[in-house]
Amino acid sequence: MKTRIYSLLIALLCVFNLSAKDIYLNTGGGGLWNQADAKFATWTWKGSGEGSFSQFMTLVSGDIYTTTIADDVDHIIFVRLNSAATAPSWDAKWNQTADLTIDGNLYTITGWNDGDGTWGNYDGQGGTNPGDDPQKPDTTDNGEHSYYLMGWMNATDVGETAYEFYDDKYKFVDGKLAISFQMGSYVAVKDEQRNYYYGKDITTDNIEGTSATLEWANGWSPCYKWHLVEGQHYLIMEKNSKFKDKLYLRDVDKATFDAYSLSGGVVDALQNVEATAYKIVGNTVVTDGNLIIYNIAGQEVTGQNGNLRGLYIISIDGQKHKVIIN
Image (cartoon, rainbow, N blue to C red):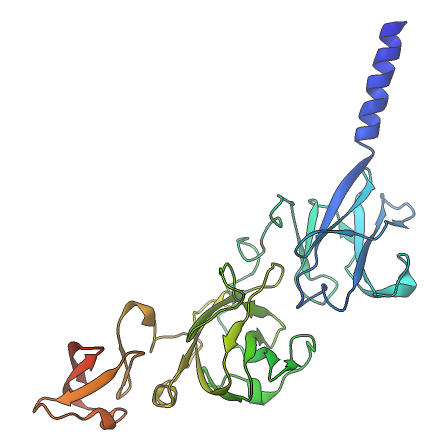
């Protein structure tokens, strides 16, 4: 008799342990669902049965939220609710995913369409990173794309929360954009398909300096912006041939800006600029160092940079280099 009771208790305990499970949502960060003090919930159901809302999802860390759902449900909708909602309801909905078949315990929002998302598994660090997933993003698209500066510029939100906002004055043309700030600004990039590019894995609050590497960021966080001080900036974009991968930006002087040209969507003129002290772009010597140019007669001709042709000796921060410019 004791054995039967013990076995029954074990069976009940197993049923209890399997009756519920945790599900996680990566809201995509402040550039996607996690803005405007939104709240989140799930609508779940099994097979063709009736559905029901969960409680509000609770914050785990960063942009990861969680709630408990029945263990036997196999379909789910993640719902973004307005900040004034007192309980999950369809009347309070701002956004929702499509009807999803559960295929993991973490769903990551990657865009604003109801099908923009990917399944992964929460590992305590935010789960599967779409940027590292060989199937997310698809970088086989080598066609032409348009890129726009966005962010917090001159104390105004430009294009980051207004996702349909595309203004040509923020567009990179032939890989470059001249822009002036009246106060310090914090920028990132988006393309014409509403993909977003931010800094990743840096140790400071923002990207600082005259260059920034921005990565396709739909679906992971935290996302870092590039800090640009007030004044005139001449930005050039070196982007590789893979769409939704990495963008390489540099803040250069006007002579470099004027000489630079990016055509065909594949960088060549300034490839791997960090690896060398200088580059030759057309008839211009490009460098971040202190540049002095001499002709073969020993005369300083630095002022002719941009119209060079022939053999020269260039001094960059005191180091001499012999160059031939055709």
